[in-house]
Length: 392
Image 1: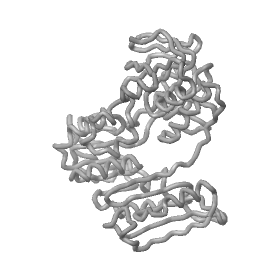
Image 2: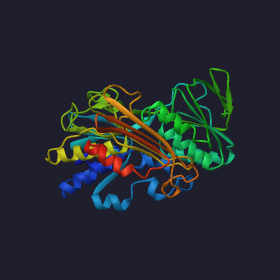
Image 3: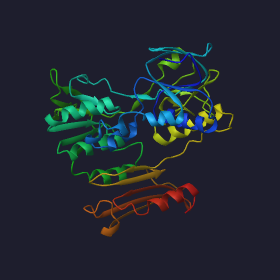
Image 4: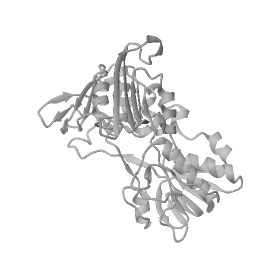
């Protein structure tokens, strides 16, 4: 049963929505809060960091009822069908609710390129718990798998499959792995250490083969990779259809100001679906911060969102990685790059089997502006402090 009205209606149940609810409750113990979502809020960024045995466990599956009770949040499992800013109404598959303020946090969906064969049985994105359950059910019959996309999520998925004894190939269209995170030199250094997976970069996928079920992936250069599972990890697209139909200013995401206000009165946006300064971050920590800012503004506490460069930490059996800041592609007059390769003390290695430590430090003058570490992550905390302080 959906309430007739609430002081704040939150659309979505991901980490931005959850942080907003917690912040609202912290500053106002009395306001009524209703959260509406088509699926229980799950910790999506943690999915590829979890082993398949955990899929189905309460900590991944849904919002804990004790959390909802502690925050005094009414959760409505329903599809949001329309937002009506002028009437201050939200229409859902469970009915209509009025609001004083609305937080639009409908997140994003996995983007699957229009590759021929992408609808075959055995082809799946890796974004939601439903995707993970589909992959888990298929896994016992999978000997070979292909991951399309060599970003962080694609690499995590590949490592996870390899850990289950699946012969895994990772395909990346760009010339090197993790192009949004790494420079080419560090990416190549990392690629060479992933000897539990086959990694092919600079490739063009022509089609996914099979009649009803996937049998392989064919490249434009004629090469073919037989497989019984294809995971597509090619980024996300913000869920903006409801916002567009409501007349909100949208681009790739719902356009927001620094205080997370949208172009509609009393409507805020945060998380994967929000676009600030032309950017949709689609990252965990910015989503949390945006949810906090939106809630504080609603509670009359002045707040603003300040984009930051968040580090990437990737722990894998083959080689762990830390990357943060500006990893300049090439040195210039203002940038100095210091790259070090060495055998490291076994006691400080995250991956003791891989005793080759690698570091890349980028300086602008005497100021550290970027860093990457592979294998030996012992200086990670010190580097993060230096980057935050803008010091050497």
